Image (cartoon, rainbow, N blue to C red; front, side, top):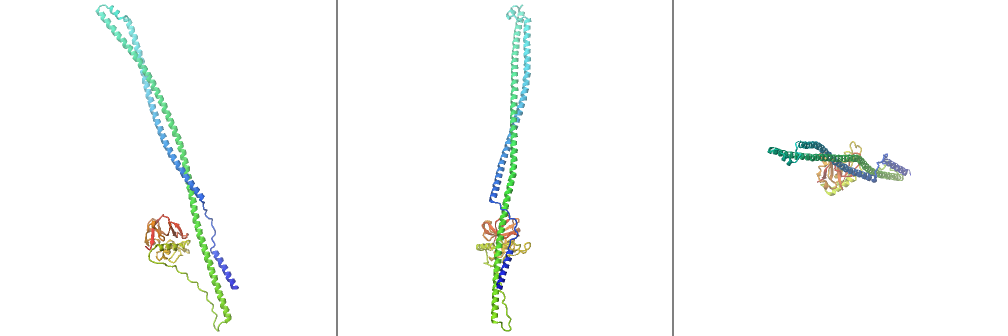
Length: 458
């Protein structure tokens, strides 16, 4: 009974120690996981803002074109106004000239009329008012007759000339008055029409500028809202990525805790079973000795506990060159360490090893250590340095990758600055040991800094 009780107490103690060892640390605030609805709403909001900005950009450009056209129209109206004003000034000068002609014509009319009056007076004084025949019959001799006949002819010609000048002066005066009035009227109409066109064009330009100012203000406002919408969407997507990363980490930790708990329980059961067996054998031996009694002069020897077998060394398969089957086996060798911590300089051909600072005390792999171990299991030895691993075989194109191929990343796109290596597993994915604080995991290929691939053993 005492022995069984001791075994039971031992099992209880071991189980408690295991529970404490795998107990999770104090929980921190879990990252928030934005819902799909929130992300889709943010994406729709961003798309709508971008659409509104594009529409307003087109409207602003259209308004700018309209303003340019109206400015051109206003400028044309201004030039037409200038033409009308010039025509008006010309008409004023023509009107002044016509007025001067009217004054001159009136003076000529006055002079012509005065000439007619003078002729009438002279005719009266010299007796030319009598008929020509009477004046000629009354002549005293041939010389008087000839003189009177010449006088009558000259008087007639003078009368006709004076009357013609009077009539011409009246016509010129009428024409000058009519031209002056027409010029002034036309100039006034042109001036009023040009001024009206200018006012209309200026009003349209002012209205278009107000419209453009409103559109520009709305565009600026919507551009600010678009920036906010992009930032909001980016924040939600970043939060989603952070949540997925945290969730994956929690899943890895959960698997590690479950594996550690199962391993500890199994070890506790094995140790308890061994202890029970040892106690049973010891009790049986004591009973036999009590029944038979010890031989004279020989002390009773106790049986040593059984030794635990040494852990097996990792299997080494094959050897020789590359094959597709070996590449697939390399992937399987690497996948068995999913969730294993990253350890700086960690990893050998036999498995994980303790890292160097800053990862001292961490049992795991670094990126080249994982590649080294995985290919060592298939008989191909690689150096523990990604730059040398790049030279360990041929370089297939990124469009012709096979499982097990090694992908390399560098700082400047050349092999001389290679700093990371991962194992291609197919479907555009790799398995990698990323960095301190992370664990071995499967991720999609990223192409920033990807310098090329190597197929070890070829």
